[in-house]
Amino acid sequence: MTEGALLNDRYQLQEKLGSGGMADVYLARDELLERNVAIKVLRKDYSANEKFKEQFFLEAKSAANLSHSNIVTVHDAGEADGLLYIVMEHVPGKDLKQLIRERGRFSIEQGIPLMIQACAGVGYAHRAGLVHCDIKPHNMLVTKDMRLKVTDFGIARALESIKPGEKNDVVWGSPLYFSPEQAAGESPTPASDVYSLGIVMYELLSGTPPFTASTADELARLHISGRPVPISEYVPDIPSALEEIVMKVLSKEPAARYRTGDQLGRVLQKIWHHARPCASTNTTACFTCCDYPAT
Image 1 (spheres, rainbow, N blue to C red):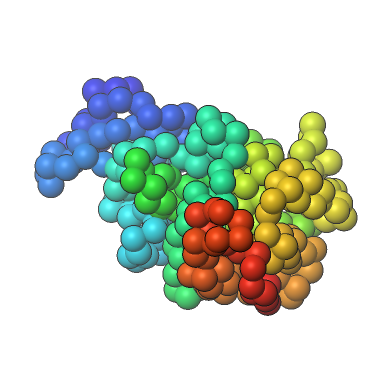
Image 2 (image 1 turned 135 degrees about the vertical axis):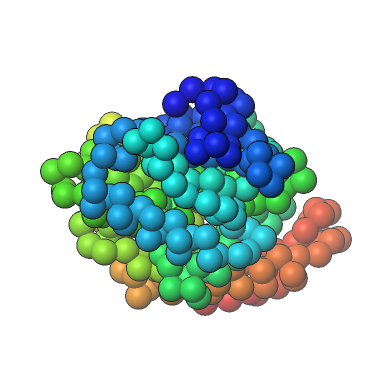
């Protein structure tokens, strides 16, 4: 598939926005509805797998039923020239991973509102009975006015239809961000998404993920049994209540975390709601003068 191609006599591919292990993403023009869209075109080896194809359309249908301001809307899905594609709203901006690379890290005042938005989108999906399974900053798009939208719901679940021997590290999950239970090969739950949100929050505020390694196997081992460096070692002025939340979310046992994205979001929202100008610290927001529980 190349720029300028017309998919199914409707979508005119304009320019490539990005490329990954399993798909290319294009800015396109929907000639029927006269609007810009983003189209993810899957690589041929995935499009040719019948089990994956069947699950892909089921997951696309589920994702298309999600309607939330913090979730990228799915408009359509189809097949053209033997390649599967999914049509989504076009979100002008950058993904969160790009922004972290550019900035190094976000301040608490900048980062927490973004995480609250991510939790809102993921929590809405949890209420609808969907687990994302591949939460990572690459799947969070941020506009210039700092509106965050989560994308790629269902893609990781569709990959579960492929036999284990046909999976590879590039596309099966994201070892930097998946939960201990995913690392152990177990089925993910909403609490697994919460763990991944915690990894993103740790990286957003500190500039680095809590676990890094040269291989996926080593990363899996660290998620299962490794102890993360306290985030306060990277961010000495982080409020203790916020650090407690981060460490709770990174618990190895799912039952020790918040159960859903909504629960985590409410805790972060409570902290943010109570943040206020503080005379004693002379900062724009105060998290430390009062005791806000992390549970």
